[in-house]
Image (tube, rainbow, N blue to C red; front, side, top):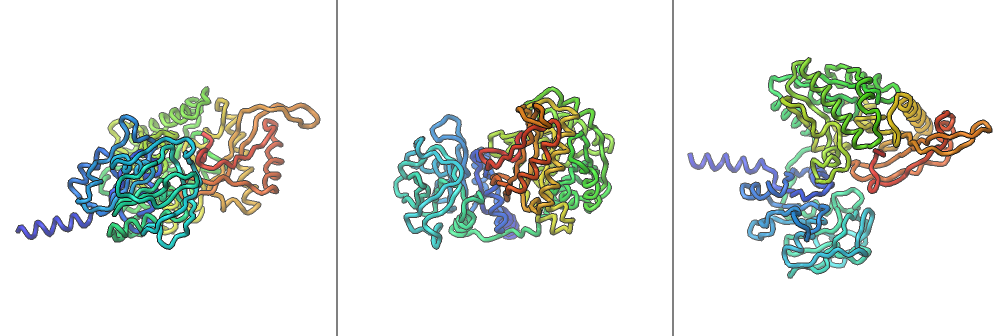
Length: 519
């Protein structure tokens, strides 16, 4: 009997992730999890207060400390359990950015805020010491930086492996403990994914996850959570909601109702496209006309976060109402990892709130089956499910839609019509020039910055349309796109024909420092 219990415990332990990621306030934490998962490695993400208890009950082979915006000398900063530094625990340890600084500081090194060494965005490192992590890689590499403090003295027994272009220490090692001042999980770090995989191999980790099993995993976990209960689902017709609907519809059948809210914030002909995608997903579908409700709620404010808060309040009230009508006890959302990150639900800092994160629906339960995934992963699932290209290749569109593309002036029906028209014009031009599908997202916004112009030999005084195009993989970082001159001319000539538009501006700012949307 005793042998049988031990065997069952061995099986249970073998099914647990052998990699622990301790979240210390970085917006990039879930990018670490994503990078590992796409290489076939499962991991668990833990807040510091949960990490100690988890480590006491489990024996990971590898522990990764994320970055974060704190300084190791500040009060009440994130503190991993000291057990992660105990060599007798047998795991390998990797500290990234703040994680590296915490390791250095805790083990007797020195960390200082040196203004000349503050590095954000694109950077480079020079490898000076041969190491397993960098073996066979070029000595000069492009990396992604985001730090103010720097390690200025390594702890006893550690060696410096690399420096940044400003002379800051970029990588350190002692035995199975590594520290990287840059972010290997960000796609702009050329060899970052390979470094993470090499770290896992040094820890003795083996792949234990097959990405193609993701559909069944999402479906089964959601079905277990819902049981026999009915659920309503926020359906925008985008890649996230359509793919999730296609995953869940075969399991929940008539117990799942997909709801699309028309709040006056949708683009031209969007309802028609949403209907086609609902049909492709095979889900029961309903439109709720709430245009008057939303326009009234958002009128009178120009503040971006206030607009998001008001949109969120009406959104959650409508879903709570529709859940009661349908007899549902659960609201499902197609929330993604970046939504959680930017909302501060993961990673600490609030960048901008999202309408489907942190809803207050009283007794109604909320489920977010794909909030650990990123956009490119959802696109891959959509292709695997056989959804049409119009789904998995569709550009993102924010939940509050055109409400977030009216900048610096109160929302009115007339301004919604203007930005809806401008958006349709820009998309048509980009499609005609054959570049639309090569762009990750195109943002067209009306900015109430009135300037003087000349139209028809007369003085004109009006606002501007801003056109912003980006290229990205995961929407956590992005490159601003400089559109070709012929396209710029075509867009400008078309948009200034509107009597309320005097100028057209183009915004190629990278993310960071900008976000994808202007609000």
